[in-house]
Image (cartoon, rainbow, N blue to C red; front, side, top):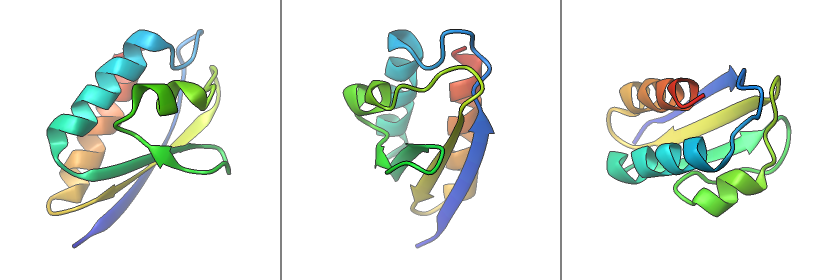
Length: 88
């Protein structure tokens, strides 16, 4: 089983707030993959949990890192990064 890592900078002026966190967590759940998200060098949290994602306190300019485990992890990771950036 492959593990893929992707990092991206959040450009939304209000960071990852309730709506983008919910959209992202739903996309993670729908992917069926094991996904974590971390802010900077901080601890990774389950990306399928809206409260965990919001609890990171991601603000504009912060870098987040996703780790995706599972078959087709490359495509899932790319899709989840797009979801994060689109939700801004």
